Every structure is written in C-alpha cells, then in structure tokens.
Amino acid sequence: QVQLVESGGGLVQAGGSLRLSCTASGRTFSRNGMGWFRQNSGKDREFVASIAWNGGDTWYADSVKGRFTISRDNAKNTLYLQMNNLKPEDTAVYYCAMRGEEWPSRDKKLYDYWGQGTQVTVSS
Image (cartoon, rainbow, N blue to C red; front, top):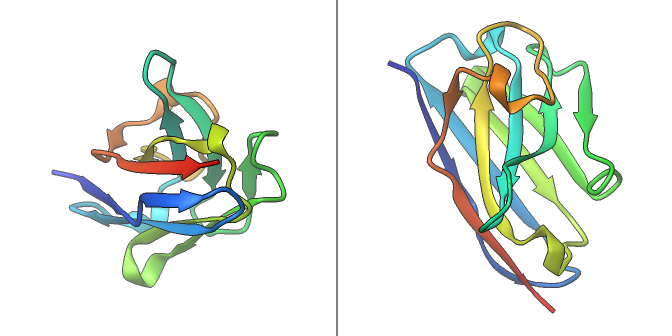
C-alpha cells in the first residue's frame, strides 16, 4: 500500500516563499517519476512540476517556471517543491503524485498514487 503525505502548506503573503514536502512509503520511491499538481475550487487539477526517477530531468508549467523548483531526495523517500515569489493565483490545494514508472508526465491520468493534498493560500 503506497502512501504519500504532503506537508508544508500554509498562508503566506504575495512575494513570499513556501517549501512543500511529500514523503512516500510502501513502495521503492527511487524508481518512480513524481509530480506536483494543484487544484482550486471549481477548477480541474492542473500540472505544476514533475521530476524523473533520478532527479536528473524536471519539467514545469509555464505559470511557475522560474519561481518553483522541484527536487527529490531518494534516500529520504521525499519529494520537494520550493515555491518562491508566490502570487495570489498560486492559491490552491497542492498534491503530490507517483507514477508507476521512472518517467513522470504532465497528464494527471497517468499517475497511480496521490497524496491527500496540502492547502497553500497566498494573500495579496
């Protein structure tokens, strides 16, 4: 049974920073592509960032490129999302997701496991 647990969300002013973490258990984390997605009420869950199994390749949504950084520590079974220069439009519930293969995807339908989400609220 795979479990993904996110943490690090909260309330921050525009221009501030947060670091999200996602800790995995129940499966070998180091062989899986991982992604971060977000969802605001009434909207579809959207791609934010993803990272290959070895951390060597990363991908970002245009809306967060240059402000967010995805990384992973396979020894700790943990995925991170460093979010800088936050904007009110970044407000959402952020989810981490694990794909059942080494390479991630921008398509949420291709992920096999999801965390419960962590709320990020950016005030103007």
